[in-house]
Image (cartoon, rainbow, N blue to C red; front, side, top):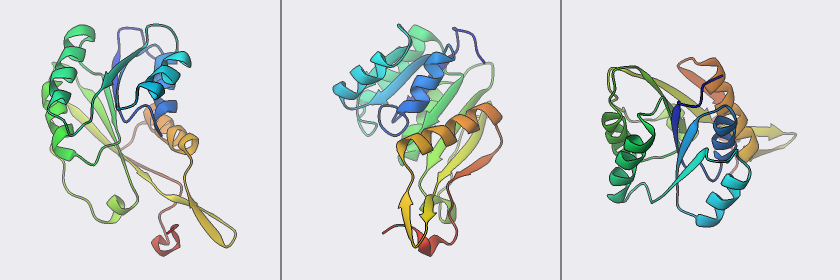
Length: 180
């Protein structure tokens, strides 16, 4: 899919998006991953090709985030792809501004089910292709459950491979059937 020089950023890439981080690493990306837990980073690196995962161990609400992202861009180049699971839209907007480059890049914003019905606007740079992945739920018989990490990662990977402005993983309707 891609050559080794491509650089991806996965925000929240050690938890439910770990499968996305591993997929991108196996596709030849240098993957900068924002997360908070050293143990999860070690597991992620063990499951990925050597020298493909670059941990950014920081909380995305911390001001240190921007310094760490600047260093990642300086070391591995601008991001060709950003995959984000963060409700902090302002931080995501600032990362997109920091990533400003001559060529276009993709932002895949992973969002919870509520955001499908009620969401705030996000402002991106003109060279950013903004795509949304909404996470729903699964109805099984008389009950419903939230998506598994594998189902979430697989849905995001499908979005990476196919493009398009939006994807729903699982179902969102009837919203009243969601797990409580």
